Image 1 (cartoon, each protein chain N blue to C red):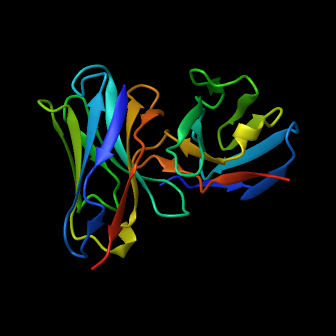
Image 2 (cartoon, rainbow over the protein chains, first blue to last red; image 1 turned 90 degrees about the vertical axis):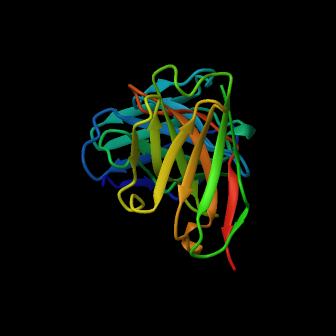
Image 3 (cartoon, each protein chain N blue to C red; image 1 turned 135 degrees about the vertical axis):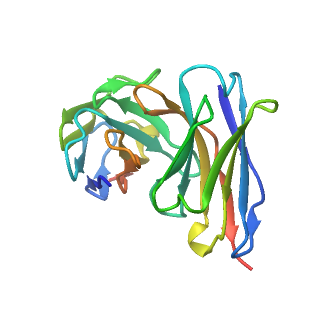
Length: 108
Length: 119
């Protein structure tokens, strides 16, 4: 099973600032990586797939990069609605697909 | 496409957890999708339980494979999850989601349903 490790666990950022979230895989997942956003009491929402492709209707301030074992999600200018928990997920090796433990982006 | 989970919110230890995911706006037997179940214990991360393809074939998480069954009812356009011999560790929010067959991301999620395992 591929282990996904996200850092930091919590990221404190002021509105308008840039946020950079990291995700590391225990072995190469190529570009088979997705990012999800989850707000309290809601289901996760797909942001990014194939490491860098934005999903439908996702704002351009969200961008993904990386391949192999190191990945980054960048939010260029945080809006109030972006404060949430973010998860990465690998879909390279089955079974199973695995998620990171999440990074909480909170208001500084 | 919209997904809606339903089922008992409380299950006794050692019993079977049974949930249903009703799919609207699309057929579970058409298109190139998997229909997946994911769970999330309170305050914790996401765990993939398993999935069913449009053909009816299934894949399960190795750690749950002996206890889980995912199946489809085309007449009702529903996906079901059964988890046997539950313990407190199975307490979680359970989500159903649609998985793209080729790219394997989860692009449509239900709102989730909370299941508590307690006597």
